[in-house]
Image (cartoon, rainbow over all chains, first blue to last red; front, side):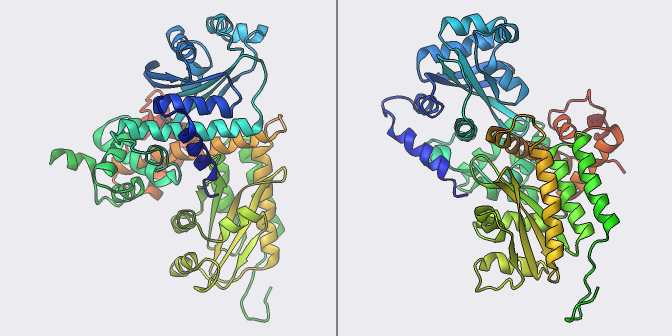
Length: 236
Length: 252
């Protein structure tokens, strides 16, 4: 209950070659924790990727292909907002389920694919995927790590979109991973105030928190108590 | 039934209890979402036990406690308080898997901040019973009372909690830890979606979160739609749903 899990993961990212980008370092850790060969992280807007990072170039290509084909676990995870586990791309079921993507996956030696949506409630941000060259399922512990990694990536990408400079990893990953309830309520209010999608409202809340040196939770409380209204802020 | 202390305790009668179990079982069978079932569990505890409020928290995949359902807003606030301040009976219950009883709420006790917050809400006794599935503690049910309750009532709360947890987490034919993790993650995300929708309605109609919750439920009842689906339609502004169209104006 102490959030040890994400601290452990943040430490692990810290240990990866610092000459790599933060996104790539994150993917290396995803790949490691899920016993995979490669991993990717993609921002998705209206079913198209706007940014992809991978542990290697092949991981990036695998994501790009899925979104250009409109087929594959990464694509479906964003669409369905649920984790998608493809355990054997060589199986007849996989070829039926992923008619366009399965041959591409096999060509790139991605035999098992595990995709986790980057989401907060109904706000969808993108997808995190891990690729293995051997068939088989994730263990329960790996699956749980996958969910934690996806939550961390979601927060880090929201922070990035809000213009929060990461500074250190703690700043990139730690704030606002938990106690989502008031933040989500406030995001709904801001979404209605400005007539913007919920994902944008979440970004606005974080940007406001950052520029006013407050926590996201305290900004959320001000919105809920109606001391702060974003449509009134904009007019000023 | 009267005790020597002069306080009157009413044990729930058998028919009330049976009705509570039937309601829970029916809601699971009807495909209600997990947030609805947990909220119903919280409400039933208040109906059948002599407690004033009830809140339910689950442990999310990150290992943090998330509030999923509560019988009213003050329980909700207290649950949040416990989570945010990293103290309180609920945390201990989740750590140990054992029920926690605090009828003192002393400011020199194990959770002074929580005790004083609970007292300020008028509560004199707090109970936490574990939600467990396959030996794994997945959360806790918190009961807030104006007077101490009987052990038998705690046993009833535990039985209701077990019924809801087993129904929800063992509904999946795959009997493994992965299923529990997946469903816990799902219930937290469903809760997030419902909170987002409540925020939208609370802004749209200038109402508070509790009234927004009532609006969502009414829309679900009128259109036969699950709460989480109503919430999704509201958040995505998907007017192909009757429920979303209905919520263009307040439902009276």
